[in-house]
Length: 258
Image (tube, rainbow, N blue to C red; front, top):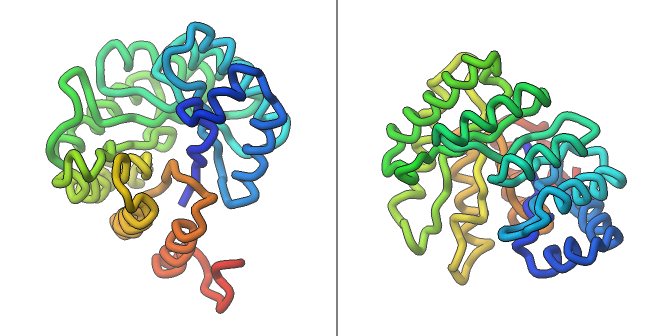
């Protein structure tokens, strides 16, 4: 399973201040630490409400890729900010993300094709997040179809059923698991799936416990990737144990350290 680090995000106060100050030492140290803890890709987000968002994203992408070789996941809803990140990137990236809104698909799918990127597709549109697994699957199929019309094949997409906080939408956790299962029937080979894992515990007091329990459930349903915190040791133990039990990694007595 692909581990995408969530930590280089301007929503975190320390990261936001480092971006404001263009503190490359702080950002690069964080990037290296995330990779050392097991991140296989790095989500980079300059945070909301920035007048200088395109310039900040350009700086952030260049700063991070100067010290790590792992793929970057450029996280923004702004087309100009997204294109600034794509231009600054030396290698292929993951675009995070489009939705099924017409205006979003019209802007982000052409960028995906132009820059030969991968693209996370969020299962929501102008009306919001669908209430059921089936409705999420229908929206995922719509985005896959629109992508293929532009010669973007399903293997370049990652379908995100959208995780909602358990404290606000308790019935949705089960439906997200069902959606991950349903997505695998949409194409052959099965499309890849991704979630923003920590969304499930937003606003709760047992965040790590909820995150790692939900991760185990999603892995059993066939999840391909997660945007998560690799510095959470207990969470990473669950991931490694799940990979062994799903026969994705070879068992050894010291599999947690392997």
